[in-house]
Image (cartoon, rainbow, N blue to C red; front, side, top):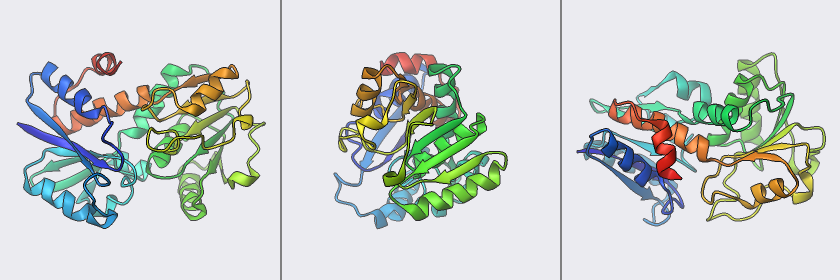
Length: 275
C-alpha cells in the first residue's frame, strides 16, 4: 500500500483524494490519500515539523503541500529538486530512504494550463495577485513564458518584495514590480492572475474590485474549488477570456503522483475524472 496525502488548511473539500486514488487504481496501484487539515485537527502552524516527521515514521511514500505551508516547509527538506529551487516553494514531497525531497509541480502545471486554456494570450504586462507559495510558482511560470512586465500585488509588502528581487535576478530581461493594492491600475495590463486563496469556498470574495476588470483583460484564477469563483464570474460577464484552476490542479497532480509513486499517470484521464 502506497500512503500519501495533503497538508494544509481548509482542505476538507479537496478533490485531491479522489483524483489521486482513482488514477492510482487505473495504474494498478494500491494508494491511499489522506487529508491533514491543520484547522480541522486543531493544529498550529508550528506543528508542521512534527506532522511531517510523523508521516515519515509511518512509512508514507510522499505527500502534497498547499496553503499556507508551501514555503514554510522548505527548511524541513533534506533536498530540494531543481523545480522547487526555481519556484521558491514546495508543493510535493517524496520520501526516499527516510529523506525528504521537495519538488514543485505548480509551476509547470500553471504554465501548461495557461498555454492550453488561453492560447495566444498577450504577455506584455501581467498583474499577479498573491506572492505566496503558489504565487511564487505562478510568477516563475509567467516569466518563463516571456512576460515582459510582471506586477505583483500582495498585502505582505516584504514577501512581495523578496519575490520580486528573486525573480528579477532569475529573469533579468523582464521588469518585475511590486504595487500596493490601493495604487493598482489594471487598465494597461493584458492579463490578471489570481494566485491568492480569496475566492475559495472557505474564503469567498474577490481579491480586486469588480470594476478593476475590463473586457480587454484575460484572467486566470488558480482556484478550482469552486470551479467558478466570484472573480471568474465577473470576468466572464465582461467578456474576458478566462480559465479556472482545473488545468493547473490536474497538471500538478499528475506530476506529483508520478513523483510519489514512480509511475506515469494519464493527465487527460485525471482531468476527465475530476470533471
